[in-house]
Amino acid sequence: MTAQESFGGPQESRSDAVAAIGRQNLEMVQNHFGEFSVPAGPARYRLEIQTHRPDPTLLPGPLTLSWTFRSRHTDSATPLPVMAVRYAPALDAYNTAPAGRRFVVPLQIVTQTGAPRIRDLTIRISYDAGRTWRTTTVSTDGSRRFLTLHHPATAHMVALRAHIVDTDGNTTTQTQINAYAPPRTAVRRPGPRRHSMFSRRRSQ
Image (cartoon, rainbow, N blue to C red):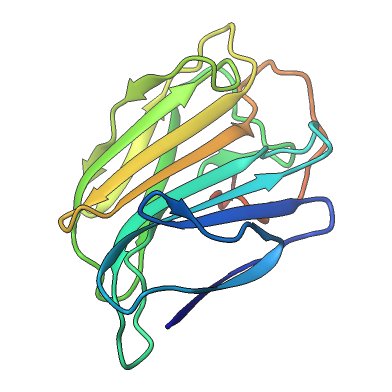
C-alpha cells in the first residue's frame, strides 16, 4: 500500500513534512507531495507539516500541523482520520484586530467524511511568539464554536495552538505563529493566506 499527501502553496512559502510509522521516520517531504510504502497491517502513523515564510512581515506566520492516527490496508480509497481547526476572525486588510472591544474568533473543526466524533478540543493562545501559552475558553452556541479574547496592551502578535482528540484516540496539534496582529501593533503589509487555517472576515 502507498500513502500520498500533497502540499502546495505560493512562491513566498515553503512546506516541509515528515511521516512516521510509530517511532520510525519515513522520507522527508519538501513541497508538493511524497509517496511512502507502508505495511498492510494496522499501525499508528504520525504526519507533521510545517510551512516557512522567508519574509517575517507577512501575516499569518509559520503553520505547524502534527497528526497521529491509526490506519491499515483497504481495498478502496479511504479518507484518513485527520482533523484541523479553521478560524474566521474579522480582521482588516492588514490582518489586524479592531481596537477597544472584546474580540470574537469563530472557529470550525474540519474533519474527513465519516470521521469519528470529536472528544476534546483545547485552544491555547500566546502573545509572545509562542514562548508562553495560556489556555483560553472555547464557547459554544448550538453548533457554533468561538473564542472571546481580550488582547493585553503588551501583546505584539497573536499565536494560536489547537489540540484535538477524537473518540478513536487520533490527535491533531495545530500551531499558527503570528496568526494576526492585535490592536496598536505596527502596521504590517498584507500577505496571501494560503497555508493558513484562517478565513478572514471583513471587520466592522
